Length: 205
Image (cartoon, rainbow, N blue to C red; front, side):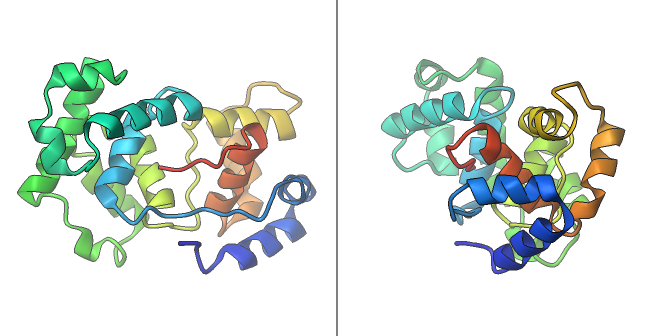
């Protein structure tokens, strides 16, 4: 499901930033998509913490071979040893099972997420073990498809901004925030294109 705002966002990013325009023009016409499943989006985000997109995808595919129906209930009944063989650390297994328990208990309520602001959702999600700000921001981008999220702690975004805007030199959070100011209110879209500039495989959670 492509966001309704995508065309408007790319048009405005093209106009406000010449570097962004070059990145957008070099890539195909694919766009951000939501999988439509809150649990799977959060679970994939946990799997993807601190590893490459390719490594995370490989682990997720191995998980699907043992849990074809990757539901909260099935994560809870799957042995840790089985999940460990998929390439998950014991810590990530604990995080995934805690997430599954929150969904099973009804502690995460999807019904009002579309009406409340980003920071409130981040506060709710970070009550779950293993979900920090980065994971919550991935959820905002990939599940709720909020248009103006800037995940400053994302390693891929840091690398891409360094490469395209800072002569491959390190860049701090304050500088990233200032550089991204012209991208408002489409910082999620700009982030997605910057990820794609490093890896032609579309980022998905």
